[in-house]
Length: 423
Image 1 (cartoon, helix red, strand yellow):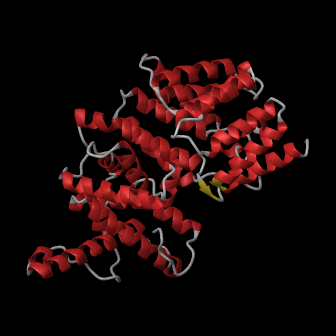
Image 2 (tube, rainbow, N blue to C red; image 1 turned 180 degrees about the vertical axis):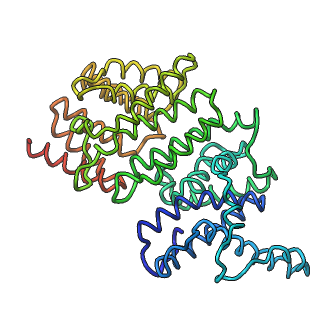
Image 3 (cartoon, rainbow, N blue to C red; image 1 turned 135 degrees about the vertical axis):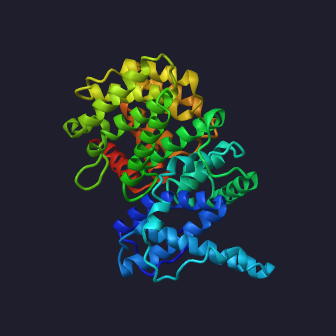
């Protein structure tokens, strides 16, 4: 719905409902027409119609059926137009549906009763696509992120991301692969991208990259739901279990991450009585079970790091040496600059801030993280630990200028001001 001016602002209830139902409706429409690009366009138009009508007329009794019906009508209109040009009106005779006054009946609900969300993710993660294109397309179709939000996540202009998503949809259409859950080797080939997509959707929900809220629980909850489905589908896949454990162990701390005004509360100041012990217990049990198999992957290691944090009674009791060692293991199997960035914090706790600052120098020439606000934020934190308050303030202010997240910006700005005042 990017770039479309609405008659009135969306309520949070309508916005959350549209985000939650859109992937299910898209999956049902794509399954029926076997044309992802056309289905995605039709569902987007249905979402725009809902965003215009529901705030005025109220949410329909069957919102998924309403969206499904309107998307079908859009496709029918397209088919009718194409048939008229070719003098083949009979092509669409069987696809004509009722007008706007139609109230979706049981058949509309039955059409989307089957939850094809995972199949939709696997479809978006088509091997014909590059990994960035597959991930971008899935974040749009399943995660409900706008093109602008995805562009910020990839640090590219919005126009570039729009072209990338458009080409990805056309590539899927040209492939002729039917909309279905892949099996065997084909499913395994796409699994890595699917796991990464779920990981990114969760991260965007847990620490929103832009806007006024730190959390988007609709995204993080949906990522956890889909991770549970993937775990059920692939019970013997250790990384599916590791990813779910990571999400649970991380999400357990969500309630303590914000204060009463919505401001960020750093880990060392969090009230750990607010941590969800039920999620911690579930995540720990899942992690213990999958680690016993001896097949170690990056999501399992990250889950282990989250578990070490969660089991500490206080920040001072955290086993930073173990966390540092786990990050070292993670670096050995995953070439990701964010790992180095996160390990630097553990390095500072184990070996001091000077060693951590030296470690960060390896990232200065890495284009994947150049310009990211987090590298400036971590440097500011490390210089504060080292007692170099002037440099700490400099880097924290630079980080505040680069982030699109208002809570992050407010936190970094306030921290810089506090250090500058010697508090």
